[in-house]
Length: 298
Image (cartoon, rainbow, N blue to C red; front, top):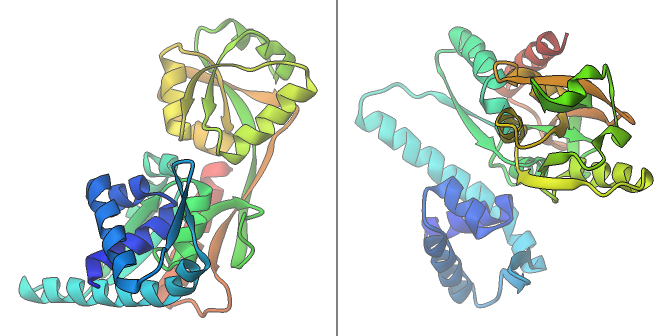
C-alpha cells in the first residue's frame, strides 16, 4: 500500500469515477484503475462494485474513507511543506474551495483576487465539478467548503444559505424568441435545445416541466456546465435553460436571456463538514465569498 494508491481511492470516492479521479490527479484513467486494483489486492477485498460501467462504493470503502482522507491530507501537507522548505519559501496556509466549473471562468477569479490582496500568506486550491461532486469533496476533506445547491443531496453538512435565483432561457442574440419578454415552456416546442447533462438536478426538473406541458424536448447538444451551454448557444446550436446567476457572467457572448416560466427557483449555500470547528481562514473566506456573491447578484 502506498500514498498514490490511497490518493487514487480518495479521488475516486470524491468524483465518483476513475475518469474524474484521473482528471484530478493528472493521470491517465488506466493508471488510476491500476492503482485501485493494486490497493484492492493489498487490502484483500473489493472497494467498488462495477455495475453497467459505473463504480459503486462498497460499505468497506465508505468505512475506510475517513481514515484514508485524513492520512492523505496529512501526507500532502507534509510534502507541500517540504517543497516550500526546499526552495526557501515561507510556509503558507492552504485553503481548498469546491465550486461549479462555470464559477471559475469569471465570477470566482475576481472574488479570490480581492481576498488574496489582503491575505498574501494564503494559497487557494480550487476543485470543480457537479454539485454532488462538490458535496463529496467537502465530506472527504478534499475541500474545506463548497458552493452547493440547496437542499443538498447529502444531509451531513452545516450549510449557510447565500443567495437565490431562477432559471433563465439563454438564446442567440438574433433568435426569433427574443421578441418575447418572457419565455414560456410552450414557446420551446420543436426548438433545438442545448441541455445540461441528464445527471444534473436542473435537467430532471426541466424534464418534468416538459412532460407537464406535453412537450418532447428537442435536444441537440448536451453539456455539463453553464459556461459550455452559453458558448454553444452563442454558436447558434439552440437555446438553453440554465441558472440565471451563472448565465449572467457570460454576457460578453452574443447571447440574450429571458425569464423562463414556469419558474425554476434555485437556492444556494456554502457547505461545511458538520460538527467541526472552522479555522479563522475558512471563516474569513466564507464571509468574503458571501459578500462577493451578494454584490454580484444585486
